[in-house]
Image (cartoon, rainbow, N blue to C red; front, side, top):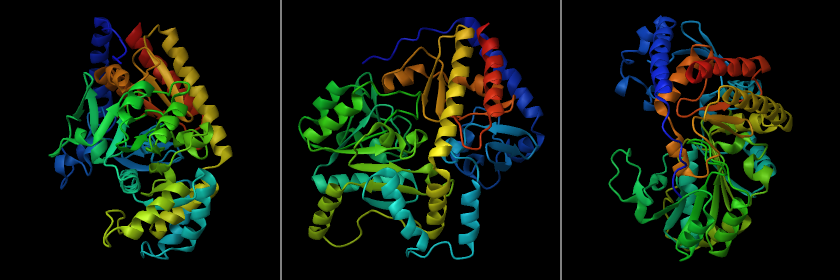
Length: 458
């Protein structure tokens, strides 16, 4: 499938975006003298001046230095308040420091932070995972990257197959073998990979999302251990599944003996139990990271009874020794204390209903702004996750999503929103609504977007 045609942007919009970015950059700097003094020249002791290089990817002249964050609000060291719709790029999807999680962390802090032994909270979390996510067996890791890596090892072990399949444009953390893309229809390593010495396409197949014909062809020789996918492509311009796509995906994987891994790290915004629960998906393996412990690093990965039985058979015959799965700090008691609080008190039907209602309000408001300004853009939403996309839509695959991305234009919009008190995700135009988000914050984001869009599109 070729990328969706979007056409060139009018020169006047490009010129206005450049002018806006220059003006908004000056406003941003003038409002943050303390942040500028602290980090604009690089924070001492850190490679490239930041503790983790993603922190330099914000389209602002320099990163905001945060003083504190509560609920859906961030306050920087200059005293500027931001309505936070990024929420740690989903890590704080339910708000910063939800009260039940904060209490659980304080309680556990005096009881020890890690012992490599189960706690009473661990015993409570197991049944909660089964109840919420509908799979019988679970393990706990520290990041979704780890969880995906471990689940793929299990898939290879129980199928005896080496290859996996990913969809173009998907994201599964920094799992090496998923770092491939299509360029002019040809699989290649993602060009930005640092230090990668292997041709990852040798054991990773890649097709476009929503293309069941290509998927069937890629699975037909029965050499693929696992298809790993997000239910909705989210770490690019959002791509929703076609009607019947997930049914076709499940049938094709089942018929070819290929396991299906659903990575819900972003689509947990959909409902209790995620997109899989809301839409009746039946994965063999399931991964969820980021918000599962309210901001404490943690992830979960689960499997069906059949996969667990096959893995037990495999373990009974393999050489003893380290499996390549697990890290020393995984499944520590701090994680379990936070996860228990999240699962029992925060990830509730009531909170999801509230988030869905406000996210719908945001989606409608942004769509009206786009229509009122006659912009060739569109809006996509999955539960509490909303994105505006600076191209016509809807998008159908990763190629479309890549072609729709407009970094220079989007950076001008982002800066304009920050200077009006609204923070959205830096990597794409993602906005999350949390249980702590207020209606007035949503309305302020809509009006701020309207002011920026009017200047660009007038």
